[in-house]
Image 1 (cartoon, rainbow, N blue to C red):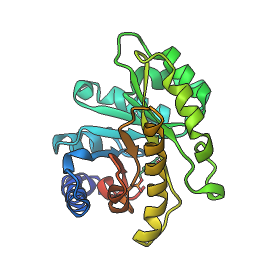
Image 2: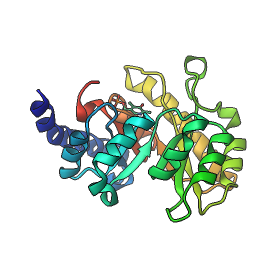
Image 3: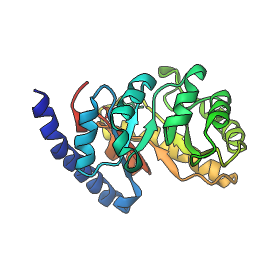
Image 4: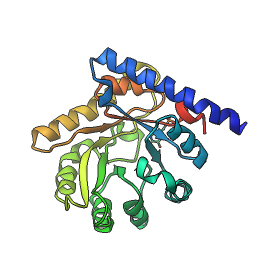
Length: 235
Ligand SMILES: *Cc1c(COP(=O)(O)O)cnc(C)c1O
């Protein structure tokens, strides 16, 4: 069973890469403008090892303790991997995240960003962060409301840039089946990013799109797609 899963990771990665390539072609975009993040939550270190051996560099994790244990088991690969924290982050868990990760995608209040900036070790490059936006309104509770994005972006961008750098926006829209419905929240996130940049921010990252909707996300400008199930199997 385990071997069957491991054996297919390489094939799955090729299939997801082909989907990304096709979506970029359809959108008239350079495929190098989209980074594939492999979401390895709930999968063992060996799944990450297998994906890395197939060329995968960027990995996403949701749960602090699980991620730290996995990183420990993969410490030999650390210089060659980029670890992104994509789960909800409570303020009492910021320190290990600030010390171990390269990116954090789920910033939805200033306090979390302030703590991450304070706790980021000086010998590491700045932590790269995205603000999580609630693009689905009432249906979802996590993320900052679209109307509050400009103020939070201004405050986070004012934190010490050698410790923490605001790169863009992230969202987890309500699941939808048809591509038209899938695109609407992705478009909203892109328009929010465009508005921030018009106001003088310098943001280059749209973290949006998962296994089921990465094509819709790329059509609307995603620069990082976060894919779990289509690479590692169902959880
Ligand atoms: C689990 C998760 C993903 C991956 O979702 P899949 O549907 O398995 O591709 C992406 N983003 C976030 C924030 C997640 O928690």
